[in-house]
Length: 347
Image (cartoon, rainbow, N blue to C red; front, side):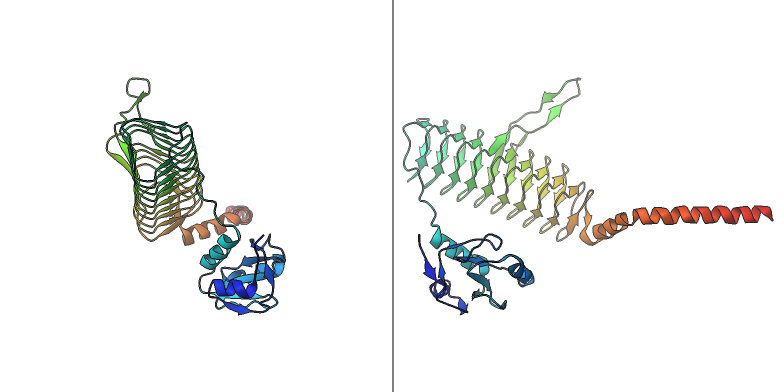
């Protein structure tokens, strides 16, 4: 087990030590789980109360302007980056477990391989596929004919890439993801559901991450596109012919219907639902479970079903909470009106 004194850790991250530098730290943990031999972190000043309620850590990594009493501290400008550096020291990432091409993989003779490609057991690479330098394909992955994978991309076990999928460089595709499956589009004009043409593909930009069991459907014609730097969580569904901009953040259980487009730096929180053929503007933030039924302007924050601006939705929720009280008031008013009507009628 590795250990360092708090002073040594402060020097490692160029932080300012406050308190006892001789404390021995043997690991890191979140506030609620940390014990006396571990370092934890507090990334925001407005969460200081958590330390006094739950923290049993030996020391705390905090922002430079935060000095909670009663704790030994390391103050740093960027808490998350420093905590990551310390966490890696105590738990170094394992080296890649596969090297070269496994004899138990199935690689078509005309596959084009870059330098230092690794392919795991039982992976299937079909004809006319191109893998760039330093690509890692883990066990059980299937990459179908005509696909192209950019350099330094990693594809984890049992992901499936349908034909003609294009993936940029430095991407991560997690286990169980399915890229390029048929879109959910049918011609029902003759009394039955006939699958629409599935002649397009999926094009994924550079530095994209796709979570476990997420699905991105191929375009009917043309391409479904995921922009550079976009990060997609687990269990996300992206429909055919969607075009997502750069650096979007798409959280778990979000469903995006076909032919939707987004600008850059869009955020969709968990379980957002987006109607087909709408556009979401740059830097829009869609809160958890938001239902998007029409185009969204840039730089807005929407919540609720149907989604409305955040402040407006708060007013709606406050009004809904008052409904029982308002109902009683309304009934009282009706009774008073009836009394007044009787008085008027008697005169």
